[in-house]
Image (tube, rainbow, N blue to C red):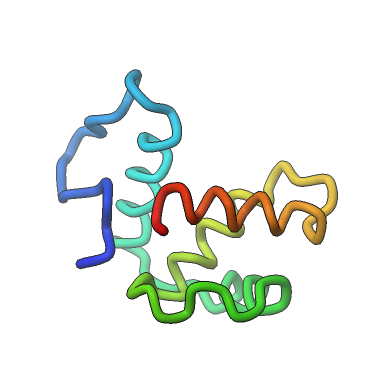
Length: 93
C-alpha cells in the first residue's frame, strides 16, 4: 500500500516505546493491510466527515478506520471532528 507511512511489513512495531502516536498508526496500517475496508465504518465516516482530503491518495476506508478509532473516546463526535482533522493532517497531510 503506497499510502502507508509507518507500516513497512515489519513483524514488530518499530515505534513501540518510542512514539505512542506512530506506534498506534503503525498498528492501524497493519490492521488495514490485512482487513481492508469496513463498509460500516465508511458509512459512519461519510455521515460525519464531508469533503475532507478526498484526493490525497489515502483510501477512504483507512480514513474511516482512523476516524472510528479516534472517536472511541469522544464525548461528542460532532465537536471532535476538527480535532480528528488536525490529527490526520499532522500525520498524513
